[in-house]
Amino acid sequence: MSSDPWGRVDETGTVYVRTADGEKVVGSWQAGSPDEALAYFERKYEGLVVEIGLLEKRVRTTDLSSKDAMAAIDHLREQVDAHHAVGDLDALRVRLDKLVELVEKRREERKAQRARQSEEARQAKEALVAEAEELAQSDQWRAAGERLRALVDTWKGLPRLDRKSDDELWHRFSHARSAFSKRRKQHFAQLDAQREDARRIKEQLVAEAEALSGSTDWGPTAARYRDLMAQWKAAGRAQREHEEELWNRFRGAQDVFFAARSSVFAERDAEQAENLKLKEELAGEAEKLLPITDLKAARAAFRAINERWEAIGHVPRDARPKVEGRMHAVERAIQEAEEAEWRRTNPEARARAEGLTGQLQAAVDKLKGQIEQARAQGNTAKAEKLERELEGRQALLDQALKGLQEFGG
Image 1 (cartoon, helix red, strand yellow):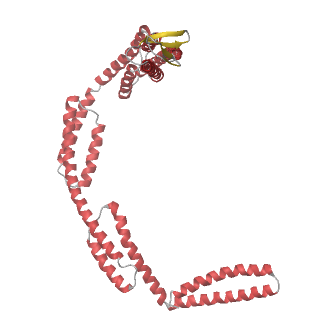
Image 2 (cartoon, helix red, strand yellow):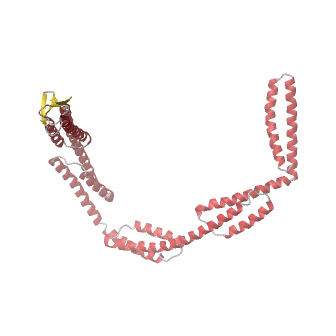
Image 3 (cartoon, helix red, strand yellow):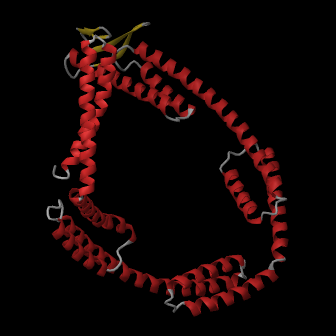
């Protein structure tokens, strides 16, 4: 005989499972050893565990209906109650009981949710009806018409109510739409004369647009086409049978002109791109003059480069600041070199610099003497005050000496 905590096999090959109500016969095993018999029925138990786990997950995480869930639970309970497996069958019954409770809870929650959704749908449809009845009196034909169409789409997306309530609300909603359509139809019936005027105006606009299509006066003609388009829009719509034909002619004339203009502009853009390449090469040539060591040679070389620069045409507007900035940077460097040369060779400036340096040096020497005298007299506060003043004068002197060096002194 073989056994485990949940079952055993007796000498005759009968397999038993232990439950709270005592041992139950699982089945008879004659094909192999008792251990193989227990292992077989334990696997059947594990299969039930897996099935119950999957059902628990479906109930918790999907929208499985209560009816289908209960049917699945009953099917599993039948298998558990049949005692054709070895394991803790009582624990499986407890799990199935809890699963029944969960399904009942979910059923009540869904019932309450459906009630809430029904009430929300009623309120939403009542709001749609109220808005439709207000729109039925509107003179904003296009906006109100579009809004009413949107309300219909919204209505279709809402759940149905009980038949009586739904029919009553739909009747009011439909009546509001019909009233608006009737008023709009009467309004547009009065527009026939205006549409005829619009047709005559647009025929004149088309004639002018076609006459302009071959123009090469790009700027003024493009501006005139914008004016014609504004007049076209202001003229209103012609009769439907004329509107498309007139528009196709009007648009076609514009397309001819703007296609020709685009072709010319494309050639211009290609030329300007080539000009940019040439100017970038000249800017690079100018930048090789830096740093300036021979001012006279650099000035002459830059003048020659600039003459070639001026001979080149326009470059793309968005690239102009960068490439011109490179040339200006070289030009500024030459100007600064010229100014430095002028200062270095200017006798008056040199004399002023030497005079300022001498005055500052005398002031520094005088302060140093006053500081020594104050220290000797034990007047520390005066000495510290004079030292702070000395720091300022010394800084000015250092700066003046640096400037004097630019004159070669």
